[in-house]
View 1: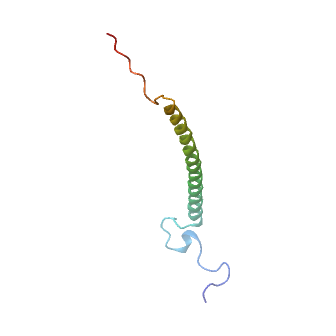
View 2: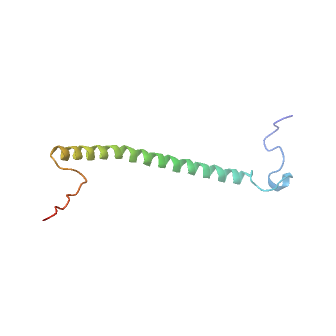
View 3: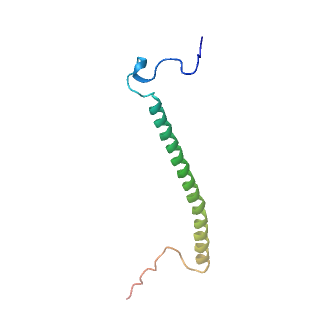
Length: 88
């Protein structure tokens, strides 16, 4: 009969025979599950921060571009320093 009653089956841990490393014990599985959940949470937070950064960056670039184009129209050059005139 497959399945059996609750609590039936082999004993847990070392008493069940072919126990070599403990990778598949309940504690190890729980630990891996917690680690993978923590990693997923960190990735989600990183994605949210990157999205916020991305959302903020284009707006600041647009305002800089508008300021630069306003200066160019007024006859000022941006980023250039006046060159010293040679005196004779």
